[in-house]
Image 1 (cartoon, rainbow, N blue to C red):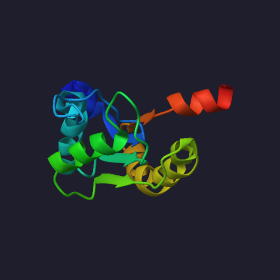
Image 2 (cartoon, helix red, strand yellow):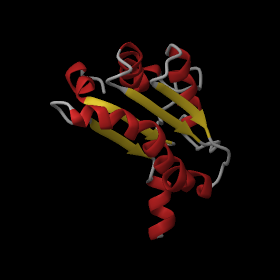
Image 3 (cartoon, one colour):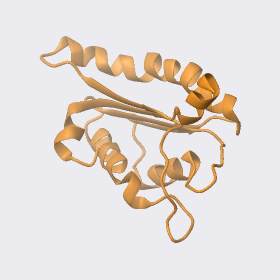
Image 4 (tube, helix red, strand yellow):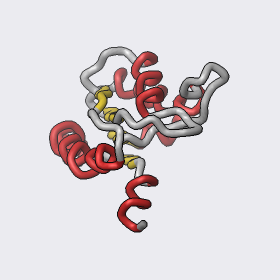
Length: 145
């Protein structure tokens, strides 16, 4: 999302409990780590009929790096209010809360937020692209481990 040409190709960016970064000197999410997401959010706000951003987080507090809550809050503070920007938190601070993002929140967001925006795009000359990031590191350990 750091490259303007790439941002323009993405119709919907869906990040489910998956936006992390290292810590800043102040112990917060590094601004440089979320700059591309913020830029995409501004693009979505300026062209809500072409782009949307869905960013969710849980209450999980990881050791050694900024949480999805800290990163989502930083992104949310940097963006204007827009019908194309959806940032919210889901309760829970355990592995099940993280998995719920993929099992429940993601499908709901795809059906109710992303799909209605992509359908009109797919009827035109180009098919909208979806970039989805799932924070699956913990889920993979649980499912495989």
